[in-house]
Image 1 (cartoon, rainbow, N blue to C red):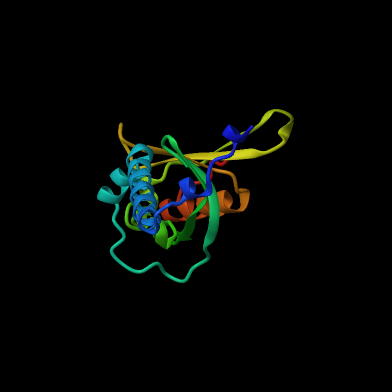
Image 2 (tube, helix red, strand yellow):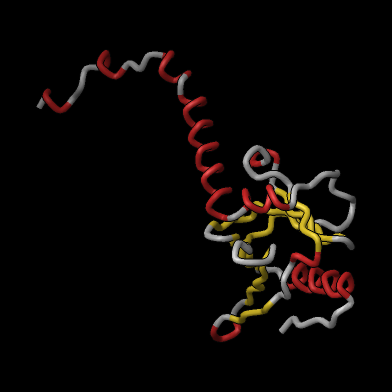
Length: 163
């Protein structure tokens, strides 16, 4: 039965190979973050609606789960409805591939509420941008959706259509 036990000297891992792991993990993380930004439409929105100023000190809704384009951001996105538009930002670790966005309210579509069967939860869907390249966004926080719709309607002076 000695053939089941490996000699202890054969399991030595050189310390230099362990030093190579953090750069590899960092590179893989940045690659997936970059691909996520492109597949979700964040990259397109960043080119079209770059944030040119600092985020103001208005109410922020942090750690929001949202679906943008084809990517799901699980408790990563911060939304800040501002009188002139919507600030959308990511944590500092993702800021290299997901820059802060400022979307004017005239580029935010009306928010549509969708309730799951049996009324267990609701989702709120809207589009950012206009035309064929608009990006669909779904959020799950009613308070944020109500505030966004109120700001959008007050900026456009149109009645709310939140269903």
